[in-house]
Image 1: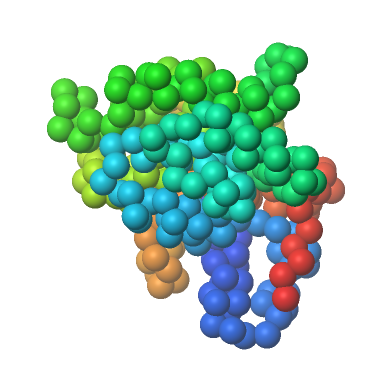
Image 2: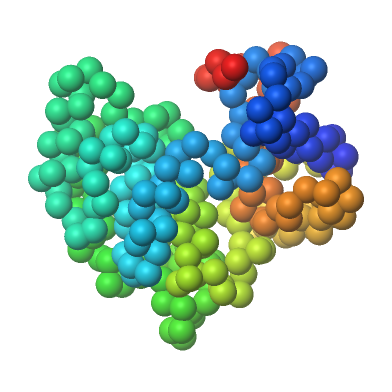
Amino acid sequence: MRTIELFNFIRERHSIYEKKAAGLPSPWTADEILRRYRFCNVYRELDTQTIWFAENWRTPHETDEDLWFASLVFRFVNWHKTAEEIGYPVPWNPKHFMKTLRTRGERREKVYSGAYMISTHGVRLPKYQYLTESLHNIWKLREEVRYQPHGANGGSLDYFHKKLMECFDVGSFLAAQVIADCKYTRRMDMAKDWHTFAASGPGSRRGMNRIMGNRIKQPWTEEAWRAQHKLLHHTIKPLVEKAGMPFIHAQDLQNCLCEFDKYERVRLGEGKPKSIYRGA
C-alpha cells in the first residue's frame, strides 16, 4: 500500500491549516497543487461549512432528537448563508424552506454549494420544490429513523446509517455525512463504533484503489472496502501519532482518501478539481 504517500499528503494538508490558523503569511506550502486548488481539511470539523453548522445549529440544539434532520436540511443546500436565512429547521416548515430557496434564486444569490449534489432523478420540478418535497417525505418518517442510543440496536452508527438510507434521496455517502455532523453530540458521542465507522463514497473508493495499486475504477463491495479501510486506519495511526497530529477517526480518513484521489488526478494529469484556492 502507498500508505506513506497518503500520510505525507495528510500531514502537508494539515500543516497548511496550522500555518494559516497561526497567522503566518502565505504561501503555506511549496506544493504547487495544494497551493493552487481547494482541498478539504484533514479533519472535517475544521471545514468552513461544518464550523457554521456546529456553531449555529448543532451546539444550541445538540439534545434535539431530530438534529439529524437539521443536518440533512443543511447538507441538501450546504451553504451557510442559505441555512442562516432558513433558520433552524425543526420543527419542519416546508413552505418557509421552499420560499427561502426560491427567493434567494430570484435575487440571484447563491443557494447551494456543489459539495453534495442532490439529483432530481429526472423529475421535472424546480430544484427548490423537489428538495422541499423530498425533505417533507423524510420528515414524516422521523420517528422510525431517529438514532436510539439505548435501543435494541442502539449505540451503533452503522445501524443508524442503514436507517438513514431507508429514506429516499439519502444514499450511503450523504447518510454518512449526516452521521459525521451529529456524532459530536451527547446523544451519539458514546456510540460503540464512533472511532471506527466509515462508509465509502466514489472518491474514497478511487482513493483506496490508488493506494492499493489497483485500476482506478476497480469496483468494491462495501464489505471489502470497509475491511481494507480498517487495515489502513490501523496502519496509519502510528504515523499520525508520531507526527504529533490529533487522532484521525475512520470517517476523517475516508475523507482523506477522497481528497488524495483529487490530488493524484492533478498530479497525473487526469483532471483538475472544480475549485481554485483563492485564500490569502
